[in-house]
Length: 162
Image (cartoon, helix red, strand yellow):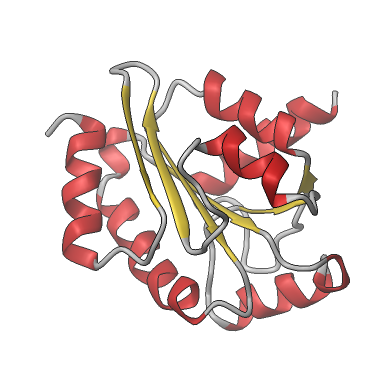
């Protein structure tokens, strides 16, 4: 049941239905991995933190570029890896103040050696980190650093096959 609720939150939030005051569910890496494997839409999963300046800088243009790909049903999910003390209030307030409207999840994990390889075997734990995946086409790309707007759009085009 919990997994279904998380999926509904992700899907509704990706279409702009969740407001700026959104609830931020916590998710375990297994649940997130299952969602990533099962989604039938092109998916962008961004790992970020309220203390990561490059993360904060790229989220606004990630949201805008993904909005431009609405016809392709691209989903953007922001996965916070903030410390437990920041969940949920600081993360929610931080996101609201910066108009982060994409659905946000908080990763309820503390061992990066465990959760990083679940997302990508090359992930050292550095953030920002972003996974692009399209299960219908088999496209998969992972980047462990800030992505410039032009490159982000280029990757989105590959993600949707344009």
